Image 1: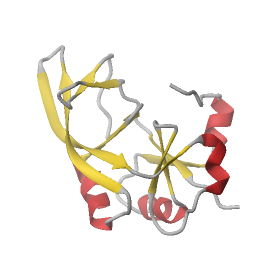
Image 2 (image 1 turned 90 degrees about the horizontal axis):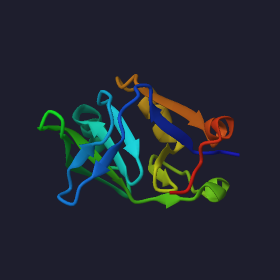
Image 3 (image 1 turned 45 degrees about the horizontal axis):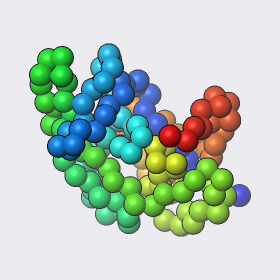
Length: 147
C-alpha cells in the first residue's frame, strides 16, 4: 500500500502565532528555520517557495508572509506561506488519492507529500527537508494531538 510522506525540516524553530494583521509573530526563543510548520501555517524560505511555484501543483496557493520578532521589533519578509487545500485526518491516511505530485495537510498542522513529490524534493537542492513514510514517526513519538 502506498502512503503519503510526512515532510519536516531538519532545523528546529520557535513556535509562531498568526496575528490578526496576517503577520506571524515569534512566541518563543529560537532561530528561524528554512521551513516552519505549526497549527494552521506552513512557512518556507523564498527559494523553496519559488521551486514549488514552478511545479504548479493542484490545491496549493503560495503567498507572501511576514515573520515578526517582537523582541527586536523587526520583520522578516523572506518567507512564503504554503496554503495547502487538500487535507485529511490521521484515520483517513490509507484512503488518500496519491496520484501525481501534491501536498496534503493532516489535522491542520502536519505537512505530507505524495510519493512522486517526495521523490522530486529529495533530488532538489533543499537538503534540510526530511521525509518519513505514513505515520511511522508519529507512532514512535506519540505526538499526534488534536488542537
